[in-house]
Length: 155
Image 1 (spheres, helix red, strand yellow):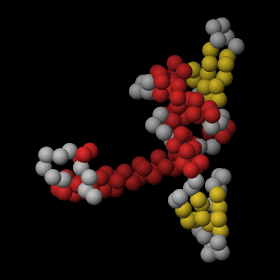
Image 2 (cartoon, one colour; image 1 turned 180 degrees about the vertical axis):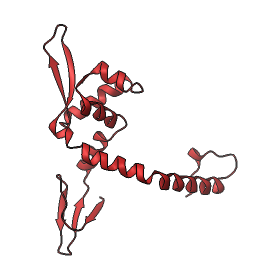
Image 3 (cartoon, one colour; image 1 turned 90 degrees about the vertical axis):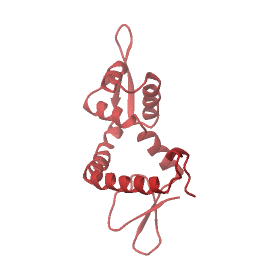
Image 4 (cartoon, rainbow, N blue to C red; image 1 turned 45 degrees about the vertical axis):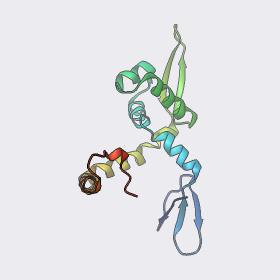
């Protein structure tokens, strides 16, 4: 289980807190937290949330807005987000019946932390790219000739 230490005051957002008297709050990352984050931050969820933060959309509107997502992946993503209370599925009283997806108030609370992570990535991307290049050069230099990276295990 991972543990993060914070000094000062911070918002807990449901993370288990354990203070043992050393002046640091321990935020324990549990399997439940990992499962939720995996579901909310998976491959397509951020794209879906980004679109639904702008406006409610029908399934076909989401497919047009995110052309790379398959119907199967979009369906699975919407179901996961709905199960976690992030998105709601609204049946419209039209003929034929139509369904619209909307972000919930709980889902809207994800915007600030997601924006913060995206900002962090934008600011630090040059350093990350440099680290990746360094790593790739080092691994390429250690890899036996004729093996590709996917099959190379340096251990």
